[in-house]
Length: 419
Image (cartoon, one colour):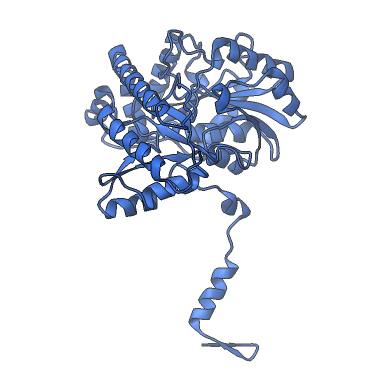
């Protein structure tokens, strides 16, 4: 027991007092919860009640990883798992450079830095190019974790809104230029886009390049879904824009391309030597990316073209079924996604956060329910996305049918349904 100012304080009071005094940083308190993952406890509770939950909330493919990647790990002969080079295992970077060269992106090994997933790649890119309070324009809705990366890098995101009503078409040059200030450092584009599934055309990418050239801006080009394009035209990278080599920073990852989410291997690619020098210094400060993850990623480079064709064909089947089923539901709007494996969907509901939680807490159909990602967290502008959800069509057709049947029945009885 302690006596302070003639008051006797118990050990419990001292512990409470110390806990109050140990405060978190403003940055920690401001970090947003993931709209993709924050409903997980409700899903776990539903499962504990015996409810089968179909996960349409998260981009975790059920497609098998290439056997070449798995065998590379199984057959490795390492006797010591040492630190890899901070920039990445040399043989992997060399192989990755050849991969890019084969799709018309002219880079060499030294213009690639291997990161711990695409998430770290974007965070590093923002950190080495932006000062505190610099601004980056981002088209909303956008991958929700961009919010966290901006906060961690002390960068201000300036949203430019796209709308489900016109299929999330890219805004005009004039709309972009209205947002550009002396503090603007760049533009983020995700192509194909998570969460909307939009695939931007060559003309749209060139238009973006014209803005970056005119105002001397960086383009942070998130292309982790490059292999998932459902048109006859090949994917057009920002790295393909002529004369903009110093402005483009490519963000990449093996997570979705090779269904290797858990290996946590991504890449920053740029021909800007100053940027890549700064990236290396940052990489050295955090030592290296996972050794076995890089071994798997390097093995995946040997996957045959038939692997990608099979994956692409499967996702097209799933997408077509999803869109057709959704469009038959009264009051539902779902533009046809042309890339990635997501669909942004407007539902006849009052609030997608409430709806998603209700699905897990109060609803079931024949012992099953569905988990979706509310879209509000994919916007920076408050109030947008309130009646929208993102659906990831990463389940096999049989499960997708069951999940969408659950969604259809749920919409019939949801208390907050809008007519």
